[in-house]
Length: 57
Image (cartoon, rainbow, N blue to C red; front, top):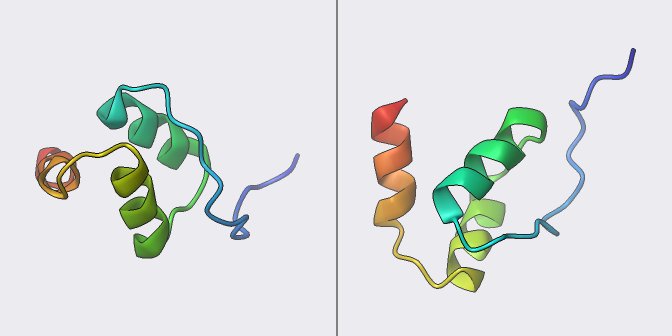
């Protein structure tokens, strides 16, 4: 069995649904703040999307 506990970088793809993409990625990969920030910038969404996901738990 392998565990994904090491950081693998910031090269995360997105499909256009930022919320679902972030939830899918973070279900199996750790993401640092700078990776999330870069992801939301590439997806051209406001940081509020991330704050909403955090608030929803």
